View 1 (spheres, rainbow, N blue to C red):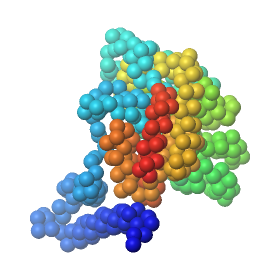
View 2 (cartoon, helix red, strand yellow):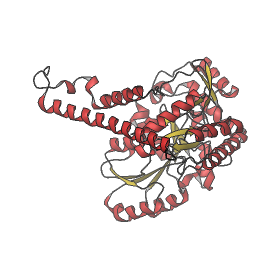
View 3 (cartoon, rainbow, N blue to C red):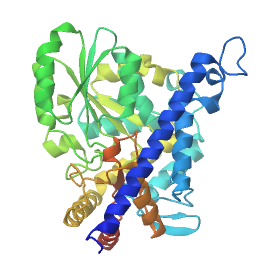
View 4 (cartoon, rainbow, N blue to C red):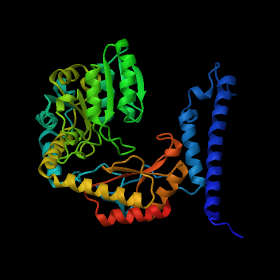
Length: 446
């Protein structure tokens, strides 16, 4: 007699065995590398093992190959580096076929907007594709100041400075402003760019539980007096989970302990607030209540790069002395012009923000009804579907792709193995019908 649920149980056992086999391969590779380091190899010269000067023996690459080989054995294609034939919005074309697209940051559909594209083309005609120098040297152009003035105005602060890379914005800002006598505390789910910046700074690093302002307060009660400058770093919307902090509470704590507060708005500006002005508008805060506003131009603002906004002393300091700005070529004129135009469109067309928020609420409601684990997501542009293992996440992503839905899996070590997921990025261009169909198909595979 067949037991009820037997096939499902068999599939789970098979998945567990495959996972254990892959983990065993990783451990074996680690033992072989350790043995090679200890005893050298037949080809080692002057006591230096191959491992120390051959890229194909680098531990990271070895792990990557094992994961790729394991996926190939399971018949799972590589979901990364797919070639998109054109503009990626609510839909995209890959290898000539149209897919519903949930792997794009084009939250407000402004990438490809006629006004935005026209601004970029006009900037190319006037300035070319590069400013060909560091901005302090001879790379400054009017489009840079127009963008920075517009960003500062959106936040209600003195000034802003734009960098050529979003990741580098955090790295160079944190790495330059803070040092060995300082303390930096951050949410446990903060972005890699923040961690790299802290490492560069040499400051003491302490982690507090996700969105837990009370835990942060407890840490500062014990630690604040042992350091000079103290920085607290949060995100507006956390890009893996789609939730956000209780920002007014964190403002109170930074004021109590005389610390700096930095908020990374990469995924919240253009998404939160009735007008899309971010987490500041969502909570009704004055922009000056946060010391360092950071954001990226590659999401809602349809460009590339990052920015810091705040008081004059902060911005002027970074412009003259932060290595990632001082020693880098200035932002390409078409990118600065495009993001300025996108910000104007955002302010002129708040209905885009309203549509995005409505689509996110619908996706979240339908997913919860279908029994899909969406974690702590609030439905604001980013919604995870937690699968419980990297293998299952990859398999479900591949199955959806076969059905015309493009959504990326997020696998270990980017997230803990048990939290492996699919990450859905919503756009104001998605229709209710597209969302309903996607959740139906996801629910059937869950």
